[in-house]
Amino acid sequence: MTTKYTVWLPVEITRESFRAGLIKADKHEYACNEILLDKMLFMAAEIHRVSLNNFFYNEDGIELTHLHSKFIKENLKRSGGVTYKEVVDCLFIVDAIDGNSSYFPGNYSKSYGLKYRGKKFSEHTIELKYWQPPPRKLPFIKTDEIANLIEVIISNISKVEIDKIYIKKVISNETSLLKILYYGYSTNALKAKKGGGVYAKADDFGRLHHNITNISKTLRPALTVSGESIYSIDLSASQLFFSIKGIVAYAKQKKNTSDWKLIEQKLPDVQKFIDAVLQGEFYTSINQHLKFSDEDLRVNKVQTLMPIFSQKDPKRKTKYHKALETIFPTFLNFVNSKKKENHADAAKFLQKEESSVMIEKVCTRLMSEGFWFLPVHDCILTKINNVDRVKAIIIEECQNYNGLNPHMKVSDWTGAKLELPLFRTPEEDKSFRLKNILDFTVDEKRRKRDKQLRYFKDKAKTNKTKKVKK
Image 1 (cartoon, rainbow, N blue to C red):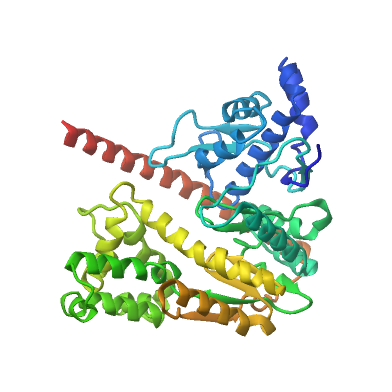
Image 2: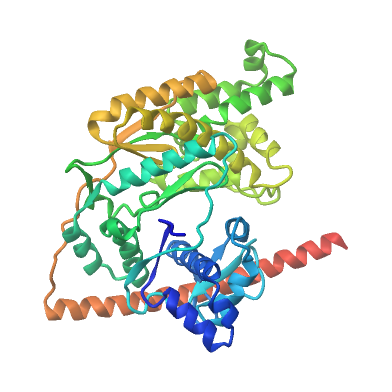
């Protein structure tokens, strides 16, 4: 049995290196299990992929990353007869990974790190020959339809052209070792299309993830399609838009009426919230209430979302939480009603609502029309000639969903290339390397300080919880 599923890993990690490690540990029955070796490669690749964006150091200096074991376990148990525990145990046996023996304080996932990662700053693709993670079954789209959509997305990614000279300039002028590795990881798969580095997959909430989903803005200018820049059609405050249907139903239930005029009188902030979202002014209204400058708007966007999607803590209300309570109290109450069982339920609910429109409806229609596109959650990437058609389809499907027109932004997604020198003199290179070492040292001290602060903060929370229980 041969599959086309491939994983992207540091060159030090191979199927044969895993097999040799198991033989050396006198685990011959494991060394002969090809499905186990495939699953070990898959697990190692997931650690490698996630750790490029989200990592911390343990006491021995190994970079660790939080992996949500539920996702990994689901993929590993679906077929093949090899368990998640067996895969992890074998990765420890061959000394491929390091990890915490227990859950890290404040996180709900175990942490692992590749020991080989980054030594040679080179990667390669490995084909999984005997096992591959089965596609996820999404609640709102048929398995064969999602398989067709993923096939189209992979085909469209393969049509992306990459300016290798520009990438070389970016990498040669980067001081962060982690970013150098990330840039290489992001672009090597696109450059090595024949090697099978292009991928696309769905998560439990219907969102699609692929090579372009989280690519750095620094690298975007290197990407084109048929020599043209890539344009984005982006829904402003998309998850807030997909909450409108819910907040309307919530307001009617709270006031026990379907008379919208009466609701407007009793809950005037509901219509104010809807208008702000549809006009693309939700974040601006929070910014103005807090008397921040326009330059702070982008920085404060994440902070504004924190009270909406983070764990509810009424004793520690930030200024953003207080602003939401003042301007949009009904919306905040609606979101909190979704977080009664688990604070993550609100975000999951809205992500599923977003995916049911953007993936199930919009993307399947774009696929049927046959022009180049890529979904990036609440955004559609396409060529300039297709922008008007994409906008029209999004409007039609959003109107079918809640009867409203979303606020959209159209922009050149790739942006302008940076003017970077391709070569440095020996003196410039020496200065550059010195800065690299100094920056790394500063970051190392900051990481250790943050880790200590995190430890004491979590310990204080634990002690406080114990006192409350007593």
